[in-house]
Length: 120
Image 1 (cartoon, rainbow, N blue to C red):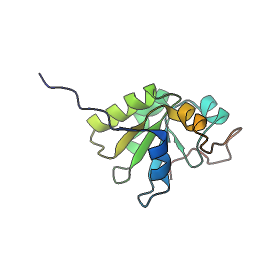
Image 2: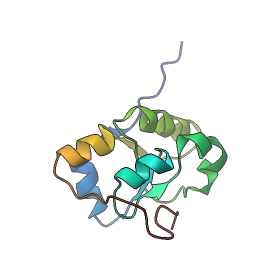
Image 3: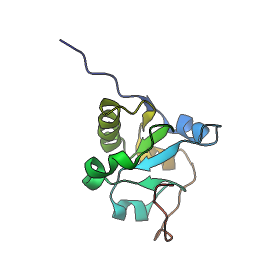
């Protein structure tokens, strides 16, 4: 019996370090728009789970993807889906935006500016 592949996962500190690194990953937020409005990472692309299956092909395969949600469950499912679908640089961020904020890392709040949340 084949074992399922492990979901690539890093913590928020590693995700923050990678955001400032040379590879410039795309942060993919799979929460819903109302959650995104409440709190989000600057520059994050919003691809809610409600539309993820239809929109995941918009994500590039040639850049690292850091997948986030509120606490890590939805992002783990989305990362697993991407890995099974051929993405080799998709990584789940354990603890999600909740852990990011608890770690004192920067967030934005309130109504997103026009174009905020769009893929680059």
